[in-house]
Amino acid sequence: MTGSRVLSNIEKYAKYGANDNGGVTRPSFSEADLEIRKLFIQDLKELGLSIVIDGAGNIWGNLKGSGLKRGSIVIGSHLDSVPNGGKYDGPLGVLMAIEIIQTLKENHILLDHDIEIVSFTAEESNDFNLPTFGSRSFAGKLTVDRLQHVQDSRGFLLSDALKKVGGGLEKYSFMTELRQDKKAFLELHIEQGKRLESHHLPVAIVDHIVGTYRSHIKVTGEANHCGTTMMDLRKDALTAASEMILAVERYCQNPNHGVVGTVGRLNVIPNAANIIPGQVDFVLELRGETEENIQNALSFLQEKWNDIAYRRKIDIQQAPFLNQKPVNLDTDIRKTLQDAAEQLKIPYMNLSSMAVHDAAHMATITKSAMLFVRSIDGKSHCPEEYSTPEDIEAARKIILEAVIKLDSLLE
Ligand SMILES: [Zn+2]
Image 1 (cartoon, rainbow, N blue to C red):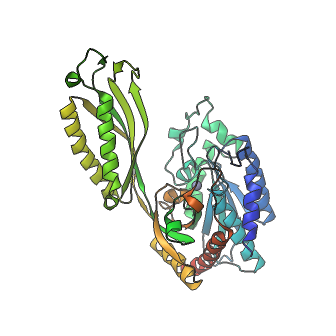
Image 2: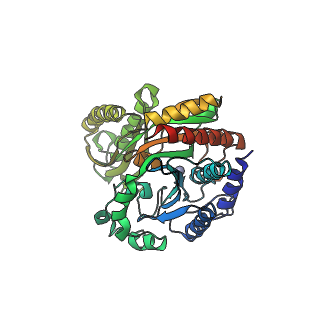
Image 3: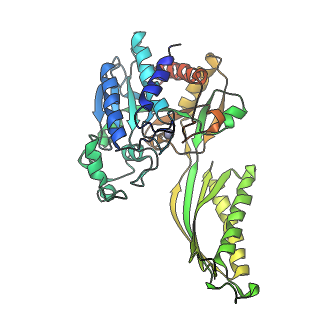
């Protein structure tokens, strides 16, 4: 099968940042990242593509079309990984783009649009605290003003890191120009969940990407002696916080509410065995399929938490710091993907993405869509991350067909 080149490339790229656990540690701007960028650029050159590195260090490879239509159809994802991550999250989408261009060239198919590959910088959470950095920058959501003093935990400036990868804040203004000619963006990604597996399906067409809401919560009670303060006189911030967190869980457990909620970080003050906790800080995270789902969850929690505060005589303060709206992916491209799958007799389903991807930001500047490929056991961000050659081949066929269709459909 032609797609086996994708598989051998996945193995080849996974050597960069490979660790002893069989996993991959390749954050952006690391040594492994610098090395893989060289390899990627070399591979793009061998394909005969012209290469641009933008201000954010995103790498673009362009194959000229017939010139009958303006602009390009872009396929891509990211090459960075989480610490001890897997081989597929990110590289699958980038290496599939290489495969599609190779196939077009071998079959002497000249598109009317240009076709482009992109590898976005720092999609994963990173030391600069700027996940989906490359696509957010490209979409114009991160400005030079905001970025010029950003440092990592060791005090290194982001602006210096960008220079190491061929980007730089002085190149940010050119991205406005580069944005103009992107006609469509298509990202192939592993599902990172078990929904496809439970439906016994190889691929899914993503209809929207969930919104994410995060808020710092401060629960203030009263620290006191744990022996001499009787139970009915306590203002225990931790037992109050526990009740609040369980309310989040109970609400989100109802599948009709369309949200998932997590408290993954908790800080107990003073955190001593013999003192009643006087303060608890935690971060509430909600992800919802629609803005309304998130707002409904917040109103419910507001009421529940007020009640807890009243009963337990504690104070609750909230400071929201992230409110990313859900993103609807483009109906025309989704339809094109569906038509391609049906024509090829490949079974699929429509799914929402519960994780944020580069496509969420690209969707704000051009028609964008995503295809998910089944993750075995739903595993991701770990060395066990795996998708079968058969499923990857199904995705390859759909994307190839969809790109050809899009070329004639788009202006
Ligand atoms: Zn990813």
